Image 1 (cartoon, one colour):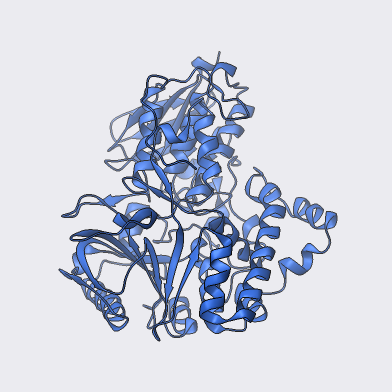
Image 2 (spheres, rainbow, N blue to C red):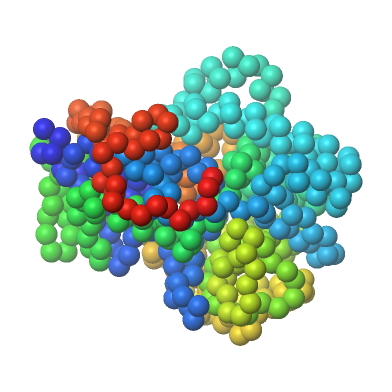
Length: 522
């Protein structure tokens, strides 16, 4: 019987929570153990005078991933979180005052590009967008949605449509593709930034990553209460469905046994039929969870790491440049941003991302607001120590850059508002502060990530460090891959009464007594 099966999820990031939710649909017993006091993993908040402010991911894209997740237990996403479509995908500002808004309406985006950069640029933008859409459609199935992507599957995809080879530009980096795609260097810089979405540099990431633009262009959603509210919603639902969630419970060891897997904490040993590790897989490889599981993802020891970040989260009153929900302030030369990072140094010419959390869906605000500012950074060394000198250097570089471009805050955030790579390494052990797992550099990088099913019987992986990779939608899909692998290996089935129909109509919902959703229509 499914209910006699016990699965333990180690880590309550969105990948672990998604795994737990899908497994609960089978009737299995699920326990989630989390070292931190709250769920969400990188989808975290910090306190501020204006309330909790997001200090992790801020953009919700690929909404269908989350619709599918809730539908797996007969629920509607809109009954659990309030989502509003953002009319502006992002505002982009350069030091000479050039400003470009990319919009949810593709025709408006084309018109804006034409107004700012001219008709030729608009034509180039249309062609680039069409290429990104074609690549996304071709590789969504065999790459992102496939539990075990392979070079053979990708080759088969290309063989069906040989003209894809030109669109993929397999021997080009994203930066070189963009040089061939756009005449204006500002547009090259803008779309090169999409490599950072998965922790890469446009000068080393494959041209295939141009498809990320399509994922964002199909819609950006504002989550009421911030992105952490999405993790909290999944948490509430898994508890309602019977999961046991144990915060403040660090795991010290994972051990395979003849009858399953055991999870060890400081005070007890828990037995399970399967364990899902929702942390950086490198923690397993370096022995943080014991020698018996070190072979789960050995490649993570030597594979280069993705970017980290210096993140400021605070409340203040902004002055100067009008901000959108998502605003990017570009440095003068992308090379001066990424070359120092490649050397392990603080970038000397940063591009800064500013999230004005309280301006979601085009809202304007007066008075105190919540902000998150992200500056790309190199991962840290394993023995790196927290440096106040570095914190003040980053604070100064961030605020001076924004002031030079016309944006100031009162009160100005101090260095205590900053989270550095070393601190991320402490939050997410063995990650080296890398926020996106393995580096995306190189054409085959996507095939080198650990997959859900490890070589160790009964041990599975979920999260941004596992396939299909970094980002909230990808980490959520990794939870689906982990759950489906466990269901197959343990012969678990989902009761039809808990599943949604293909049209999305819920049957037998556990939340049928809820009030109508306040969400905006999608």
